[in-house]
Length: 297
Image 1 (cartoon, rainbow, N blue to C red):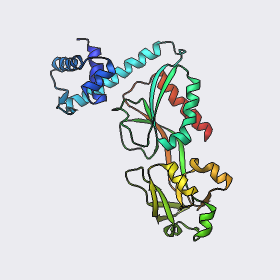
Image 2: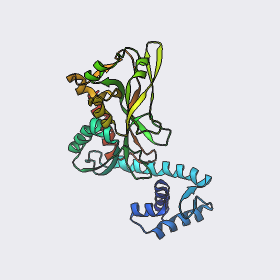
Image 3: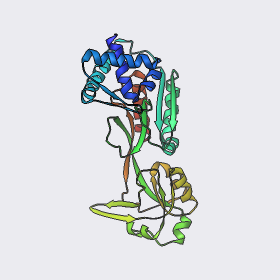
């Protein structure tokens, strides 16, 4: 048994949560993948993976072994990477996930400039507001906005995203004035529902003063650009990322209310698997995104 090859197969089985998916990624047969793991377990004298007809999970020994094996394999790849000519042009395929609305508004330009800067990298961009399983679905990286859940993924912050409360001049003229956060209670709220718990309670801070406003939802939709369209149609007020409405605020088609109050602040991040080696192509993507958003900010 090729020990190093067996370790690679074992980690791929765990990363892809299945023998068949690992076999497809590695270009091997299911039988050869299963055999390699069994031989590894026999050599160790310990069971690493518990297999069922529908799923698999690691034993305690397997979990500890997976972590150590990942460190060793990543160290070997890093050594190989450093030994190669660092001036070589990054190349290969990168699978990247990005939210649909945020991707169209804030990320697409940076990724397109990345494609121009690195013509030998094939960028496979998957845009969806659904939360993808980065490791399980084989992504190299994912761009995410908001509060990151606890996970084994590494993260690099790209920028802060501030939310602003906006409405059309016509809507504001037809409805009670909004001078304090509590005034929002009497207004129609347009809410982004593409999260586990749609936010209907907004918090605002001004100095040491913290005020919460309960929103009276009129329209809910799981796409932020659709929320923006509803605001522009004069249906109500909405809290949207400032990067979504900069042009409309400058043109006057939308008006910001409660400008002296700070609403929610979220970050924009690029996340990637903790166990994945830092290839030149992935490093190039991370550095390019960091530079692009630093310049934009």
